[in-house]
Amino acid sequence: MNIPDHILSKVDENLHNKKKHPIETVKKIIYDCFPDFSRFDDISPKVAVRSNFDDLLIPKNHVSRSLSDTYYVSDDVVLRTHTSAHQTEMLKNGEYSFLVAGDCYRRDEIDSCHYPVFHQIEGVRVVESVVDIESDLKSNIELVIGSLFGDCQFRMRSHKFPFTQPSWEVDVFYNGNWLEVLGCGIVHYKIMKSCGLEGSSAWAFGMGLDRLAMILFDIPDIRLMWSSDERFIGQFDGSIKKFKPFSKYPPCNKDISMWLGDSFCENSMNDIIRGMSGDLVESVSLQDTFTKDGKTSNCYRVVYRSMDRSFTNEEVNNMHISCVELIKSKIDCVVRE
Ligand code: PHE
Image (tube, rainbow, N blue to C red; front, side):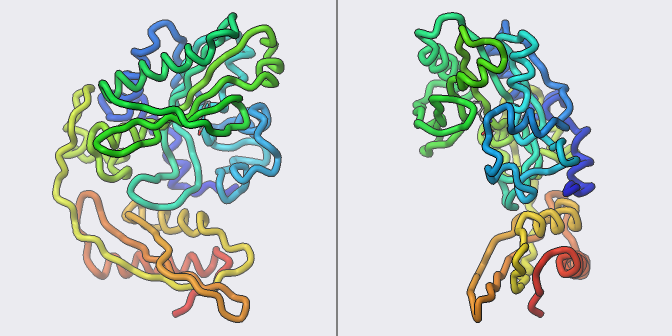
């Protein structure tokens, strides 16, 4: 429905299962924190809308369900937007302590730490006694953070997820900054009930693997994760190692200004640019916006830069012209020449 080919082609990549890849290494460190949990890491990312949203009590009108945020395979199948999509199915199948790792998909902005495909790991544990569930969650979070970051400060900030209550986001103090690393909480009683577990309680956490790998390995651009260049992939041996950058090629900036139509969708424009440039786009950022006679004009800066080669002016110009042509024909806007 709204899934471009360059996204569909990622469905079989499974970076989280690729030996010695930084994302796989991070996954394994987390696996090792939970030796007696069942592990699932080859479940298809094509999931029912019900599993991804309804079963998790995500309201019908929640923005995350919209075509501008989520990739729809059909009216009732999406590319999962988080590994929580497997929570209820697992619980119903009688899994009481499990980890699910997998590729997740969200339409999003373009910059060095966002990519429409990313990886998450979910951990869930059902306990009989309700009394100490929060402290059990906290000590397990502490364990995961300790294995990833060593001895460092972390904080649990109260947060809201529709499927957990209470919920927290967890930040780690690393290299002088607070970094958000995971979301967690106590599984909502309505979900426990729908899985036939009303007598028990459960905690759950979900964390993104790509950004963790970027931080721990000093990887400056998320597109590198998808590189098969030996200068990247050949640097890793299954343990945490600082990435040694190979030369960065010069960027090339192109601006595009447009009057926006009523159904203008920025993420659709981003998909067109990403698809057309085959990952040569480094970022798309709004430079300027103004409204005149009730019409809004946006100017975007598109930065093109290859991770592994330099390119000619002509090549970038042609690519940009093709992007603009496709935007003109597919996006509700009038490009200002
Ligand atoms: N699924 C949530 C996300 O993607 C994370 C989460 C998992 C939160 C489990 C609470 C419990 O942001």
